[in-house]
Amino acid sequence: MPATTPSPGFLLSFEGSEGCGKSTQIRLLRERLEKSGRKVEVLREPGGTEIGESIRHLLQHAKEGHCMTPETELLLFAASRAQIVREKIRPLLESGAFVILDRFLDSTTVYQGIARGLPLESVRAINAFAIGGTLPQLTLVLDMDSATAWQRIHQTGRELDRIESQPQSFFEKVRQGYLEVARADPSRVKIIDASATPEAVHEAIWNLLTAQISL
Image 1: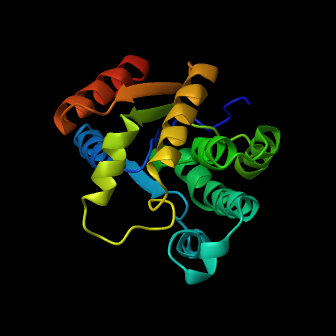
Image 2 (image 1 turned 90 degrees about the vertical axis):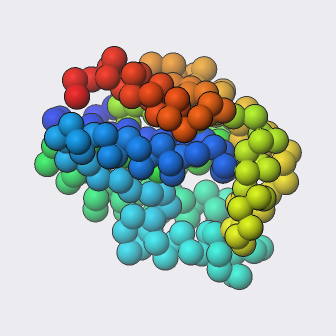
């Protein structure tokens, strides 16, 4: 699937299992990019638009979602993605913004395709329809042992959402799924060891990013 994101904007997506530290790394990268003079926008998936946020609530918290089938889950994620690509991502890229996505199409490939066991051919076709050629130039997968990630989530003390409540075996499928995605598309998808300190992980991300683009 060719990347057709407009220049001079840049589209970067963060991926990884729950508990891998995505929120912290996105915050650190945003702060550093803004200090360097870049216009930065951070968007989350599902969400980022009024339609997307309604879908996010249904997917994660609404009681109606507890009996949701994997097929329904897949299509709801795709609906949110189709909206944010056209309403937010493309206009931001056209304005020259550096857009950071907290999850994008690879999450659907991994969670609904590999971990949930839906046919990957169908998942890829739906993903392609939803993004319409708008593909990240770079995707960073924060990788860590699934047991550690699972423990992090359960030590927060907050109420877990529908996805976070999955058993550790599901987290392991997710981790292996991301490694498989990276092997299949090594030019775009890069693995970052997320087991180090947040500061060390951030430096690894910054070094990788600056090796690819001028900041």
